[in-house]
Length: 341
Image 1 (cartoon, rainbow, N blue to C red):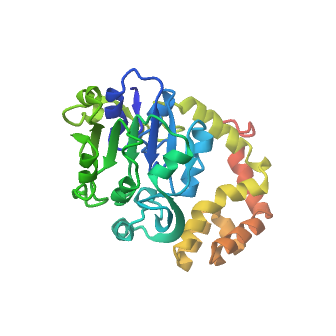
Image 2 (cartoon, one colour; image 1 turned 30 degrees about the horizontal axis):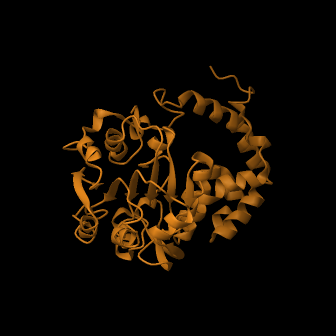
Image 3 (cartoon, one colour; image 1 turned 90 degrees about the horizontal axis):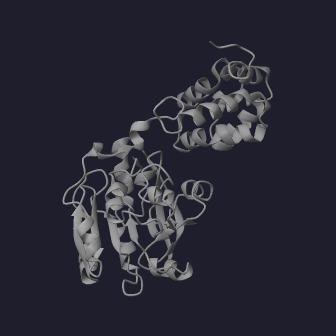
């Protein structure tokens, strides 16, 4: 492995277990972003495929673009099928959870949350609907709802060879496996390894795999990590630096020619999220000044009070000479107008 994508080297540890296996299948529950902090992405790059479940629509929608071989489901996994509340934590998407107490704990990091009603499927039903056969590994990271996920599985019909479960309470890092580990033991899974964040279990019928797991967590510098790469356009050591620079230059050069609707799609989401968190008038003016500088005083941006009014303000601002001039000034350093040594 040249680069780890997971939060705590989970993919590096699993790579030792499945060394040399170029074709495999995973189920990733609470998959998150398709690349960053993702346990299954390294395996996808080796030619594997899988079923990924992620209840946050913006993240789930990325899989079709980045990992088209995977089957992505936007929803929740639980003990029984139906519906349940899902608490979406602002900014810190990894804290989003079915457990409201866990969502409230994100306040310690300055994040609020919104509650949505989402469909729930059992793991057994998902396996049935998607015609799943052999499962090389199952990963579960659902911020306190792990017991619910495991209770809805059919451990006789579908037996993942390895199970990886986040095993500490988000934020506090307290032990959290007491509620669900007995179920795994009952279904003939043996505890094999704890990396400080996750517990790894191996099916009783797979002793060879258990022997390949390390006795302790690997050193963080055992492999390069995506964290250390920084932003691709800024770091020459990033594996995608050259492509990122070309794309950045090309995008900024094209700014004055971009369709207004595309510009709106690019500008609105982050600021709409800020407004949804009951931003104060000063907050809204800060947003306007940050994005438009002097233009803020010339437009309705300083008066916005909702995502809808923000969108309308952008539409009005985009018709102004000041906005068009801002795009032109940015582009001039990339489109050949201003020669930069």
